[in-house]
Length: 425
Image (tube, rainbow, N blue to C red; front, side, top):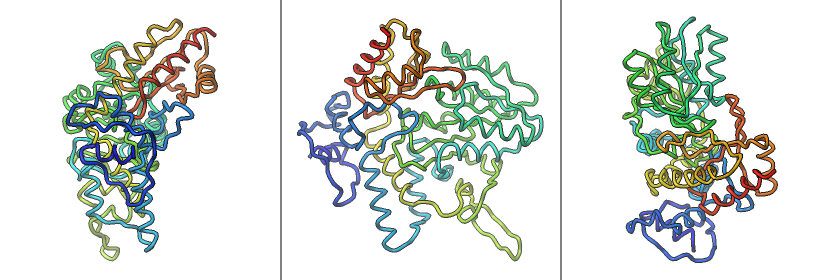
């Protein structure tokens, strides 16, 4: 069966729960990764069959919510069934560390630097509220922030009197963004907080260069990585940021309600753990008042959590790593580039995402000169069955299309057909 073929096909396969239902489909000839067939459309057709994602519409909103493959769903259900039979949490530090090691391999850091969170927003809140800032301290960020990296900083500004300074991201060149950021620096600057890729245009910001600037100026540097983990192939230690938060439910294809927070080892005592409880501590004693926080990023975790969904996140990472992040990104880049190139040929289409591949993610934002973006979204949804995302953040007022490994070049053609049709309205 097609699903089992793919499981075997992905370099010895993924762990699938025993007895899980298999998809039946027209048999496709078996091909091998060893033959370099990641460029063969049959490979990605196999991959698409691993998702229960409906074919009744074309899904183009991974930047908002990623679809999970059967391997993830099966892992969650199997662990939930196992634990509910004995009514246990399944919490186990050895399992936790094993799963974090997978995440560390994906992100390019150490397992001890990772904390589990519910989503990127929770990680952002931990960093924003945990940094030792005082009234008048300045935080530099962009005008294109997702609400998850805007509201926490605004709330702290209102509560503690910090000052937020903004720069408009330039889609023309990475050096220009560095210049815009550097012009905002002052003696009161303490933090730079930016997205790895903007939620608006999918622009990849020059985070490694920003990290070097922050280090030279003795500033803290935080990255909102919700739009890059599971899409781009990168290494956090190489980037050099102090902290990075991401969601498990977007490009990582994990269960909803999962996220990861990276805090560099030497920042663990700087970013205070303000919300703590069971599992946050190494030891405590109510009689003596002694409290020793966990020596790793586990200090930011507290209370009972769902073991099954984090086991599912581990399965999602396995899925991505079996394919190879370099292959995932190559696929996403190829699809999004084909779409961007097609858009350039359509009258009335205005592309807002960077044209340079090195500065562009797999999210392409555009709008039409002849039709308002939300009306365009409705038109494409109703006539062409496309699930896109309207982008109002930063006054962009455009349509965002996200391309991930379960999409195809046939879908690229279908979307372009719809946009061409809309150009005639």
